[in-house]
Image 1 (cartoon, rainbow, N blue to C red):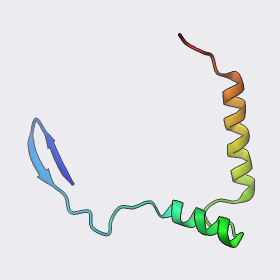
Image 2 (cartoon, helix red, strand yellow):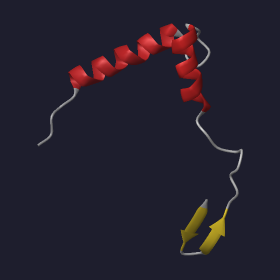
Image 3 (cartoon, rainbow, N blue to C red):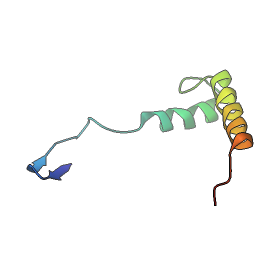
Image 4 (cartoon, rainbow, N blue to C red):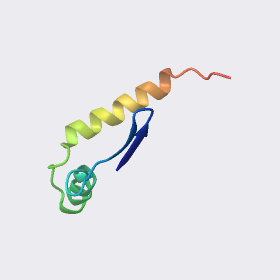
Length: 61
C-alpha cells in the first residue's frame, strides 16, 4: 500500500496482513450449515435491525 499525503510518500508491505476471512467463513457456514462466522441468532438480529431501521427511515429530498 502506498500512502501519500502532505508529509510525503510511504510504502507499507501488507502481504499476509490484510484480508476478509469473514466472507469465506460465511460462505462455508452456508454450505456446511455451521455457525463459525456468525451464529443464526446473530444473523436474525442483524436482519431485524435492518428492517426496523428501514421502517423508521426518513426520506430526504
